[in-house]
Length: 125
Image 1 (cartoon, helix red, strand yellow):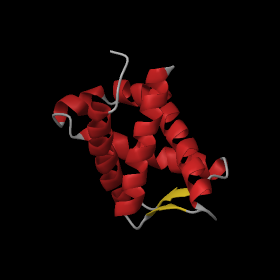
Image 2 (tube, rainbow, N blue to C red):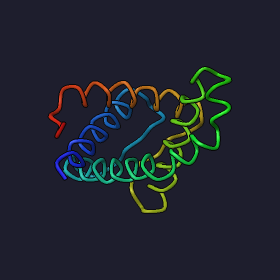
Image 3 (cartoon, rainbow, N blue to C red):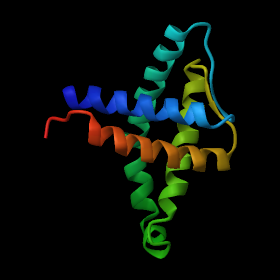
Image 4 (cartoon, rainbow, N blue to C red):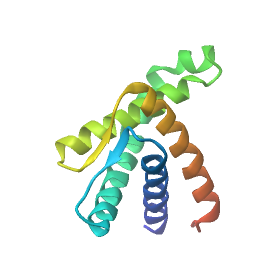
């Protein structure tokens, strides 16, 4: 359970950095508290997408991983971020990613920040 909370906080922090750095990734809300709550919910959705959908996509695109020496990971991460944006819209969360290239850059930022936060934050292992 602790590991789940740590990963969710790391995802929320990484998403916050992407929102802060990229104009085309937006998070709106009336107050800071509402934005934080929305960010945590989006982080949960993002975590679920990465847990449930990403492994299936990776298996289906395995030949592309070999062919591109892993660079297809950028595209897969972008697609997961776009799927998260779409699901956030369906769940009436005020999070939006505008465009594929924004999602590629956002996915790269989220990956780097998430990795750094996982190094810093405590873990069960």
